[in-house]
Image (cartoon, rainbow, N blue to C red; front, side, top):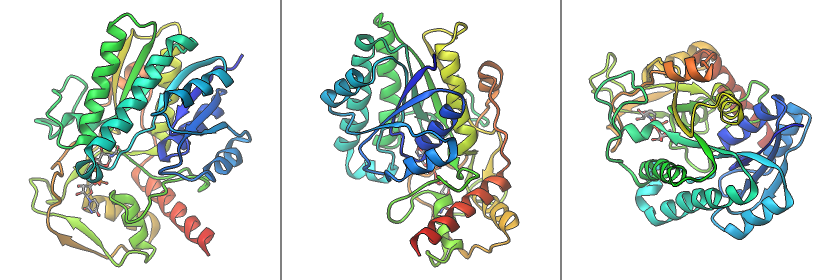
Amino acid sequence: MAKKILVTGGTGYIGSHTVVELQQAGYETVIIDNLSNSNIGVLDGIEAITGSRPVFVEGDCTDIGTLRRLFEENRGINGIINFAASKAVGESVEKPLMYYRNNLNTLMNLLELMPEYGVEGIVFSSSCTVYGEPDINPIDETAPIKTATSPYGNTKQISEEIITDFINSGAPVRSIILRYFNPVGAHPSSLIGELPRGVPNNLVPYLTQTAAGIRKELTVFGDNYDTPDGSCIRDYIDVVDLAKAHVMAMERMLGENSGGKIEIFNLGTGRGVSVLELISAFEKATGVKVPYRIGERRAGDIEKIWADPAKANSELGWKAEVQVEETMRNAWAWQCRCMKNQD
Ligand code: WQD
């Protein structure tokens, strides 16, 4: 009997890629999404890739009645992957209460209902942002948690604490917390990818829109950092690699050899890449020039952070496989398809 997984925020960027990998691994999937930052057409892409369409519930996870109805109408859910959250750092500074209400109430509603409906475990979408500016790189899971630099980052820290306290209270559930570094790219089929609304905050969608002529030029936010080429360094992890990590986490969490009540894993490639290196990788991979200029630093940016993924490699049996040039090719192919669809 196939296990059934509830994916909150499952029509979103990482959620949709994870639903694809779950279905291709033989899981049944149920998606709940309020479509506030995603498009219902994503379901067609998932179906086109996998041959099966997830059960979809349009709804808001901050409303416990909506979630209760979902569990009543979709019995036998074994596990949850919780992506449903607001995630724009800058917006969280302007609207902190919306971020705390949305991100924390969603999680607390899910945790409250899990024992009632026999849901064994929850995989939580966390972020390397909990580490702040690392003292050393690469960074592993024992690194200290620093004071959050944004309400968004704080919701991730508080969420991890809520899960820990709930499980330590004796609740009959397990959890795996995944701290992502920088998710980038798109599915190689170009049937799903990132759909930023408005002007993208993140580097790669802004870069591909500039390459496509939608944006006039890319601004590199500073080249006077203490890094080899002066631009900030990140650990850019391909979104399909990231999605596969969630399947492996679910298998571990629901399996016999689960590693205990709560586990935390850093998900990154282990390679630091600068902004200027990423631009070069894109141009090399696609043959498309990206007009850019060097601008001022962006407030709140971390200078350099990249993962030590050894724990996920050894205990999850997961390793990032996709090389950055292939990720850039997939991102560009997705951008081109989006433009074709708009014609
Ligand atoms: C990457 C680098 C910028 C845009 C954020 C969140 C993190 C996660 C991923 C949700 C930085 C530079 C960017 C541009 C640029 N979000 N940049 N010009 O800030 O590392 O992480 O998104 O899970 O929690 O903090 O990602 O893509 O915004 O920036 O030079 O137009 O690219 O300065 O060095 P970031 P990013």
